[in-house]
Length: 269
Image 1 (cartoon, rainbow, N blue to C red):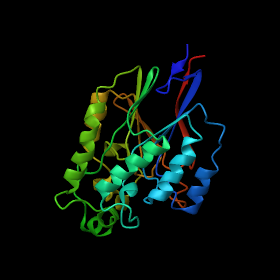
Image 2: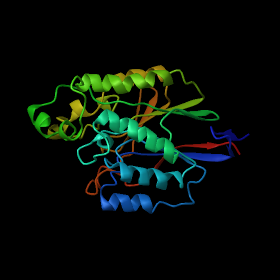
Image 3: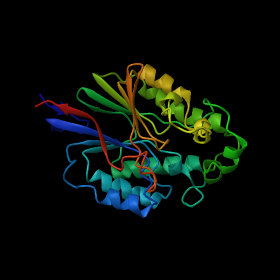
């Protein structure tokens, strides 16, 4: 028996890789992407959990590079991807999101659920709504999203989160033998390791939203991939395996692995 993908092709063995936060604005990160093998992953799937770059020209290039290396690439936007202050192609972050969807489609990158025989992979959009606490004055002064994103006047963080999370509702009826969901933002803060120092925990209010966890439960995910925190983890909680495999900034060598992570192999040979 073989695994049938959305494209109709059949693969005897298929690996599912995940990575997030590749931040190819940095030369070192961009070189890593461009140097990925063009032959080793032809039968495989890549989950790209946000934060590629805030420049649409670089984003398109990244999508093109990944599309020729993997059988299929699935992607959700990260907060950095929606920054607009360096990129004059979009008037605001909502327009940037729609522009990214067009770029992804044109490059063959998927932002909707995909099905591969006994496996379904489901993207979940999100933002942060202070489910995990109110941001300090320091965060309000320093968090880059507050200055580099641009939203309609009536959009506060709760409205932004609702805008994105509501898009997931149509996906939550997916059922399969194995379901992998993925988001950029964290669905729960207890995924963060206990060793995180108090001064770093001040960032928790901008890590994500608990609304995502509710959607993951409704979807009955077996595995959930996320990014954003730049802290690589693999945690099993409440019958779900949560994985963060962020590439991170060049200097983040202790908390990131700087490589693709295989989260699942389907072998039907």
